Image (cartoon, rainbow, N blue to C red; front, side, top):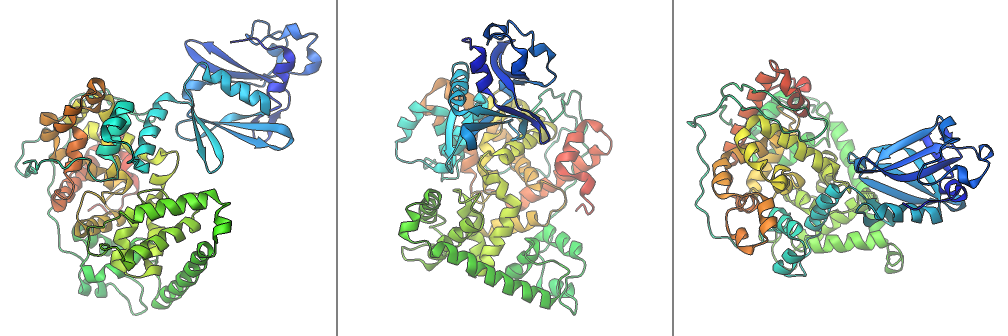
Length: 580
């Protein structure tokens, strides 16, 4: 690293904010290599204490005056995920540093603009930096592992279809594989029908003792270093759906719903009869409170209608001239038009060129974009809205149902993908305990071990894996919040358990595909190929039975074995008052 004289030092940082009320207004900053890592370090310095330019050098040899300072910091660049520069008044640039959990790391730096450029260029000499523009702001992604993950996710969501498959494969095999095999888009190839049948687990010999596990998925999760003994799995059959008469039995004279937990247990066990869905879903999604009277619900419905019309009018009044100066608006509108044109077009509700339901779907997504402009529109959202519109068949109800659904699942679509990453981590932690055989197999491949192949399941909550009738039933089960937090992760485990033999016998990790870079590997039964080929062939009732059985196993063992305390946190056992 080149040396800088004191004047350049002093101008490099005008101010350092250690906290909201601890500010150093004169400081220096250095970028050094130490212990094979790149570090950003800085300290307070007073100009009056320095007699000559030679007393302070960029390589840190002379630190006489710096030693007297108490305000200092050291940040290992490998711990960072993003650097976000923002221009502020008086010619300075604010530098914010974020870790992979998207937590702001102190201090916040203020550099004069020319030295901000030097700061970034110096970092680029030693680490890979990916520049991204989002809503007019520059984001510098600096964690190499995160760059790889985010590039794959970004390409997955954007559905880039211009280049041929082989062209993309040659340029970026990892991204292409993830995009085509685990994306929200339909399966890349028209695969031959595979004769895999879901194994009946009822009479399967189960291993109740889990082998020692040494994988640490993420820092916040502990090592599991000794066997965990799981009890025999209880098989609880599915029940009947909530009937009209059962619903009426729970409605009081005022219209309030009595014993909501009883209603939720019935729904968890068997779902809801179709004719009740547009009524009961409003309660499950939180549009109505269970305790509200009929009059309160009617008043809320009127409020919904008025607010919806106001929000819809906002984007409808944007003319071409205004839109020409509104980049994000044009971008979101274009994405919505492209996405709607290919959403569930094979279903009778959306088929045909001049389909009014497609127009309504587009209108609802545009209105949501205005309602939550910070999030805007991200491809895949149409997958969540489509079933809601089919059930409610009403513009206002479908919109507010979608708003409340996004309050539950919207973090999946955020820019930093921290929610998806966290769910990958939690899923792997659960897999280590519940299915050590598959976990050990996946650990042989880094990419497969990170559970990327489950991305589509998590992003759109299994929408692409089940028929509409089944996705209605699955979502209403998940919306009950029973029997624990993150029950959808147990759904993932159940599907993977049913396919463990198939994955191990015919599958292979993504790392092997990337390493060999040979197209014929895709024609074999790889994990992501197999996962995508399961679409519309998964028996939902069996999956729900297995997932519920896994829950009861883990609930029992967590009371006796502190080693699975992480599982208790993930599934929120402390908060689960009504296990099913």
